[in-house]
Image (cartoon, rainbow, N blue to C red; front, top):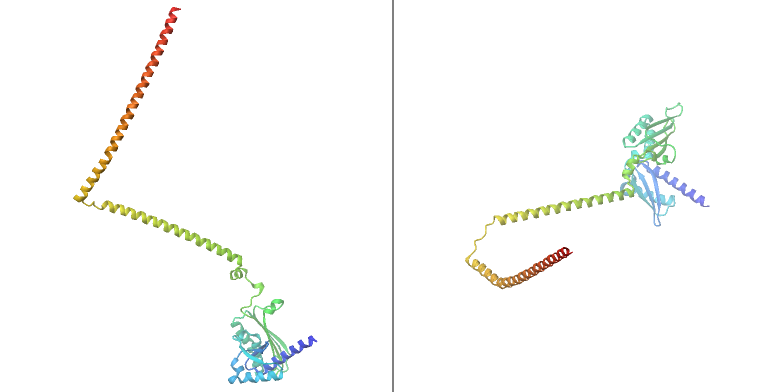
Length: 326
C-alpha cells in the first residue's frame, strides 16, 4: 500500500532526527533537511556551532555518514553543515538551550527571562514562552507559566509565519515542558501591511510606464529649450560680429591710391564713355522722332477741333436766318 510507504518514510525521518539530536546536542542541532538526487542523498544539518559538528579533520561527519548508511539504509548519504547565524532568532535552538540549562540545575525564572530578553534584543517582533511542569520544586504541584513580549499571532493561516520550537527538560524535581514562539523581524503579516509603503516599494508596471513617458517628454522639452537658447546665442553672436566688422571697416582709413591705379581708373572711364556715346546718340534720335510725331498728332487734333467748331457756328447762323424769314 502507498500509505505504508509514506508512513515508513516519515518514521525513518523522525528516527534520523532523534539520532542526530542525541549525537550533536553540544553542537546545537535544530533540524535536518533531506534532499534526494539521482546520484546522492544530501542531508543538510542546521547547527549553531559548526566546528563541534565537523570535529577534528571531519571525523564526526565521517562517523555519522557510515552509521546513517548502515542503520537507516540511505544510499550514498552526503552530509552538509549549515550554520545558524543568529541562534537567538531560532525557536528550536533557544528551546534546546533552555532544556540544557534547566537540566544542569539553573532556576527556571532566571533562564526564561534571560532567553526572552536575548530574543527581543536580537530584533524579534514578538516572543512567547510557555513553561509547564514541576516549576516550584519537590513536593509542590505542577503549574504553568507564560512569559511574552511584543506582537504575536496565534490563530489562522498567519500563525504559520511564526517560528515554533519545543523541548522537554528532566531536572531532579520533575519534567518541564518548553514551548517558544518567535515572530522574526522580516516577517510581514497581511493585516499589518502599510499600503503606502508597499506601493512605494512595489510600483505597478503601468505607473512605471507613465513615469517613463513623463520623464521622456520632460527631457525632450528641455532639449528643445536648450537648442532654442543656443540658436539665439548664435544669432546674437553673429549680429555682434557683423556690427564689429562694420565698425572696423568704418574706422579703417582708406589706402592712398597710387598713380598707376588712378590712370587705370581714368582709362576705364574713357572706354565706358566711348561705348556709351553711340548708344546715347541713337537714343536721342529716337526721342527726337517720337517728339515730332507727337507734335504732328497734336496739331491734327487741334485742326479737327477748329473745323468742328466752325461747322457748329454755321449751322447756328443758318437756323437764325430761317427764323427771321418766317
